Length: 441
Image (cartoon, rainbow, N blue to C red; front, side):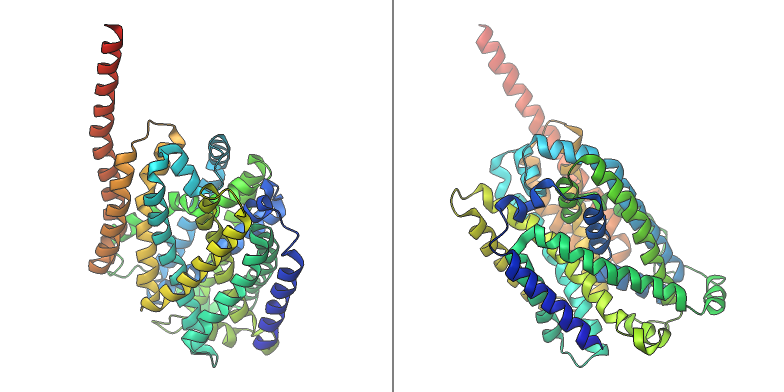
């Protein structure tokens, strides 16, 4: 049954690709001409924020330490509500700066000489995140179906690339709506078929293992709340909505629905064997045979819906660098990025460590985004130094101590940016005063 449904989805993607290849304009390809409705914005946001790495992580934490899983689910949902709260400011500031993406927004605010650093830094962060998503899917398919890790990665790569190359964000909004249906129906099935007496018995004994101590818990809270709107795919969904109110309402809906999905996987983890790392086997045991395909399909949908909306913001800056055949340039950039992500997936050897490493690196963006949204005076020098340094520090430290990774990453990124900005802005003010004095004389 899984093969039939996967084949059907693949055929839908191919047909949609053929139909949309010559119909889409550059504006539709980039951000659906900023006309995405409430329904499609919310469906895309739910599908994109229920990544395989996210739900597998919650499931795994539930099997190891049950309290942590529910706490993570709550923090993720809080982050999506914060995105809804920030939607008007994000939408307004982005359109004031005439930016096509998150990267363009930072570059237009901090100066064109930051383009290379921002592009490489943001690309590195989300390459890791998407590679972790691919690895999560590969691990699941490898353990539950006769697929090798390489075959599963290639399937996800091919599935996303086909419709992303042809229709861009116009196709993303349509395919994400279909993927949302599978993801949410799967969560509803979990709630319906759960052995609730057994679940309630486990909930009475919820605990947080020593491995995930108070420092790790505090780090999760401080990180996950702002990370949702700093994530480039959510940023793109906000600016692609037809107006700021649509974006805000869509993310309020997203927070509620995603929380339900996250909790369903946390509850599923309570019924899994201690130390389990993939939810599909538990779902197959739980669901009737005619619904057993939902486990695989929902996680495939979770992976591809996360990747498709992340690739386009990474490729969008190419439009600022070329003056002719920009749609062709976008498609070539998308193809190159997708191929690179598939290759990077082979270098990760642990889903949880890879996901934490990618998430930890995201804190490097916090100071720059907060500065730009607040309208504070930018320091290009601080951005160019702090971004790569904070990313490297987060990646190294997560290998040393996962518990402290989030807090140290946040502290390092803010300390680096604001200390350098303090001296750089002071130097610029001194030069301005000196120039003003010379002018007066």
